[in-house]
Length: 492
Image 1 (cartoon, one colour):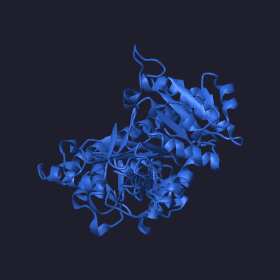
Image 2 (cartoon, rainbow, N blue to C red):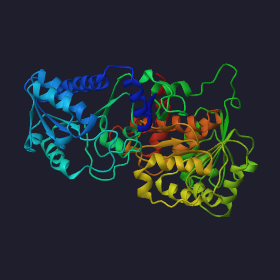
Image 3 (cartoon, rainbow, N blue to C red):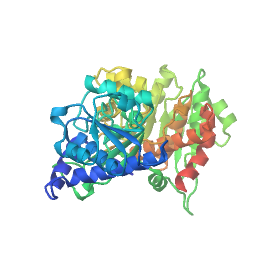
Image 4 (cartoon, helix red, strand yellow):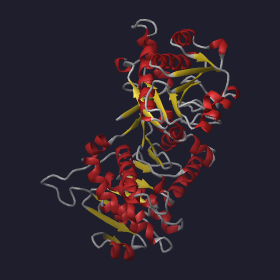
């Protein structure tokens, strides 16, 4: 599992560690790891070697610039032609600059050195930076982009907020980000994640520090990203005594005369979700049983459907009186309930949800939900600060929220949030959300808590999208068909 820590924790942990170690140790550890990654990239690049390659260091003030300058010095000692642009000359890191010059590096004020470089190190600002790139940095960053150099960000791309992933203006778009000690939330959550490129973690010893911030939960991490082994460990597995009822039964209240396909897709995904049976309740009963004869169907509401261990309500439901009644019955059933699509807009009028609910809005639906708890936001604001708004919704409704998008964030009212690493733009097709709802609802019925159910479903949904797409536009039906392969791939 990848874990990301907020700047407050990182600063405190670094301070505690620096008090135990000789001065400069952490910076040298960071510079060594950074230089090793750069050397590897240069060997893979056009020159095919470190010796003779052209490296430009964009050095801002403070320790981030120092990391970059010391790494530049290491590359210069290996024969690279290293130039440094000092974007705040009076505040350049003295030790780093001296090391670079002693190794044969030079200072430059010509942006053409960026355009002609093989590799550019972004050491402009680090985790202490806020806001967009300053004017002094823009010509250098633009020249680097025009020249096609490999851009390596030091700790995180300059212009990306480390705690939220927000990008309020101009920012460096890196090919690789070398981050130190721990992941930063802004590297895992869009839009910041899309600026980070491939993220590599360099161990500088922060794992030795625990409880650096008084009252911090566990080791202080605020964001998690499940990896394949984590998902495999959470997947429900039937045992020798399992039958269709012991494995769990999920109810699906979805679809309408106008949108029967939503019910078909949600039920189809639920059937692949590890439960023993799926009960369908709603107006699309005929379409559902025609597509999935193993489903148990009825045309009434959730109250009349029979016993289930979880409900999925909302996809394609419309917003008429029958839909509102279905949502209320599912919410009042006393079992975990996933609310999606039309159900979310009906829930927003209520302004509250059961603690065992899982809400799955996209950004537009999140705006309506936020309004239901008295918070005004635009779709653009939600997309710019996904982590913040997912947490605000989770706290406001007192339940778990899965905020869909280019980065899917899953947040409970307390504790670390989760971010999904398998997202793909191939899933941006009609019906994709219905598939996710059915899958997550099945995992709820199989016994996973809402945070785990949402996280595992998002992971498998993204993986299935990648498997089914194979470079072509993806339909929701193809994702549903690929779910069994996604299960298998995640548990290998």
